[in-house]
Amino acid sequence: MITALVQFKLPHPLAREQAREIFSSTAPKYRNMSGLVRKYYILSLDGQTGGGMYLWHSREDADRVYTDDWKQFIFGKYGALPTVTYFETPVIVDNISGEIVTDA
Image (tube, rainbow, N blue to C red; front, top):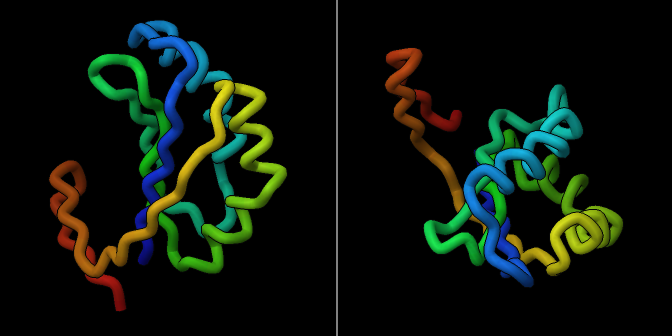
């Protein structure tokens, strides 16, 4: 599995409530997305950086989403272009389900 950290510097700091409203408006776009296991929307504590943590089945799944059109969507929504950093995710500890999942 692959984790992608997406970040973008916001032109103006967002309060948590503002971020929740904006993020909620885009969340349905990611439901049932092929290859996406989970997405966390993130906002820095100072409200100046937004983004997301995405858990993907594969890098290929992620690359199908992080296109130039997607980058322009992010720019149009938040006023900043995103950066994407990839991480191998060989083990996941899920305290809600009680599972430890390994990448086979």
